[in-house]
Length: 413
Image 1: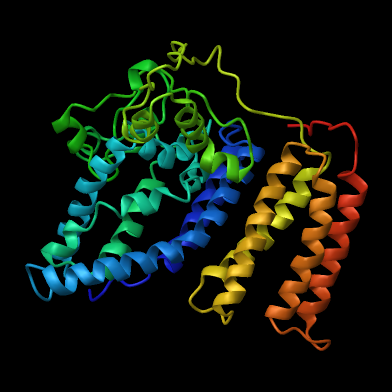
Image 2 (image 1 turned 120 degrees about the vertical axis):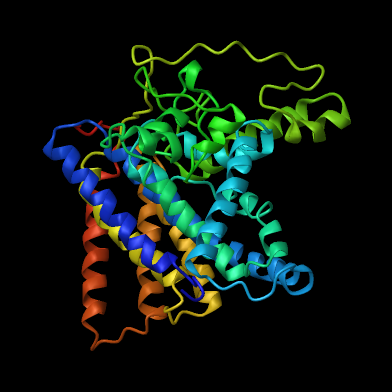
């Protein structure tokens, strides 16, 4: 099979196809599985997070490369079919524990909780991961380099593993055959994992095999209807808030802690632990289908066509920033990444009808269009130049027509 190489370029369009098919099937069967606002927030979080993957990959190749070069026990592990399976099992076993710790240790929950802040279950939810989660994961996969697996293959296998996990995020797939449900993690198992029903909390951490949960006592069967989300959610579509909500909560508690040692301990203690001198947390009230109130703020009027167009443009911008085939320089990619973050932050502002969005969007459209023209070397003879200018003028017109109201108006569902 050779080296697994950079598999993200193959998996990304496949994931988008799955999402589009799920949207189509949900509409055809009239199933209320996907809300527009959470879909945009999930895509926005994913696009922003992709800008950090390049940095994570560089760090992984550097550190793992040193470990592999000097400490590997086995030489020349090639990606034959059996080594592929062994590496997949190794990644899956380690990730089971990383995932489990991510639900029990404060700083690791801070990295993982953005994924659980989604209040639905669909393929787009799989895209909603924090900028720090992958970095935390790679703190634990290094033993695979000591065995002798190449860093490039470990990084690629984590991408395959991530895509396997992607396939679990749906309500369209019912329970499968008993032997599949006994061995492999299925959508039914992962629906339980995302549940905030008390009986489902901290269950089913496996991504490829569910046998780890059966062996280590964290398995739960899907029975009653699953309620998705998390307790004390961010209540925002802003990707900054989604990514750093729990970090901010921990930081506030650390600052308020009277004892210096507790200011450090809180980051590494179990969820719910309180520094001495701070009030205990209030007991949780179980979320149920009857009492759950999903986050659905009023949005700017006629926001949906605008957001769909700029979602497409955001995906194109992301590819210029992260693709190895892009001819942008390193500096241009950094500038493009900042523009991408400005873009997705504004999406949240539009969906929450923030008063600052009128000014922010006008500025973003103007300098974003200028960046695209300059970085792509467009000239007066380039048809793409005129397309970009027309899109910019149309977008500015839309912003002036609909996004400068004083009172937000909720868009019809």
